[in-house]
Length: 464
Image 1 (cartoon, rainbow, N blue to C red):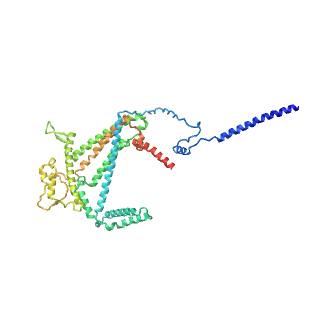
Image 2: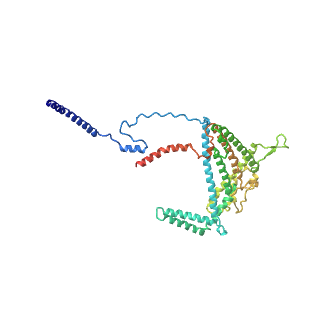
């Protein structure tokens, strides 16, 4: 029994070192793991990545994305949805339509600016030329508003960046209003001379004054707006039937309607043209027949156009002659000379000899406008029509009335062009398009270019 116990103790001694060695090895391996340096993480780079909206890079290889870019997914081709397919021949028409629309839009703004300027200038000159002694208050009101504006701008400029700026500006405006009646009589005769010259002896005389010119500009605005609306499909129309048709079936129905509207507009062009030719230009509507001189035949459109072109050329000649007188009169008027007290008989006769009057009027009628040079007589610098057949007042109104048939012609061409673009598939026939906002492909391209720049600027601002 004693021998067996001694053997068991000897075995325990042999096993104990092995266990201790395994524990030491395990401890050593844990120390090695703790001592192993962790991979470095660039915090600044991760911050920049987060600003760009990308995922933060991981230090572990298993979490990193592959450097090989994934293959782009093949998107299915968009369905046609039954719409009219695009044709190559419509591309140039589409580009032409865009340029035409842009030109008319710019012209519309210029006409609107001209009309506003004409009306404001007329009110301004009329107010300054009104004598307050006659009981008219328009001159006093205009001078009060003008004084308040001038004093307010000066005070605002002088008090920029200083305290109580608003109070000083308000006081200056009140002072300008109060001082308005004090100088109500200033410049009445001077500005009255300018107003009388514009109304009685300038090119405005030939167009009936500013009021008639403003009416024709308003009419021009309406026709330009109608043309632009037609180009964008925003003209007035009844689209109840179109809403029950498929996108492809809408095209022929819309084209038929547009062609019909274009033909109606084109017929109106001839109607207005004939009315103007006979009523305003006094063109002959009948003539003796070639076969029998005792009978009368209706004149053709080409014959009426020939008569109109001659009269238009004559009216434009008178416009040029009046403009030459205005160039001479303007320095005199600005210096304060009365508009009808500077042109002598000798200067008038020399001016008459300087133009090619014989192209449009008989020589006897031209000689009848010459003035005797033996006196001190003065005359108004206004053109006179030789022969006294017509008066210069509102002489060019008939040329301004040609805006109506010309505008209708443009609208007619717009309808035809829109029908061709619909047949070529370059515009969509959508009943809801008239209620949508204007869309421009150039603006879309500009937005696409501006988006990366804006994102970069925002990222740089966030980093700063």
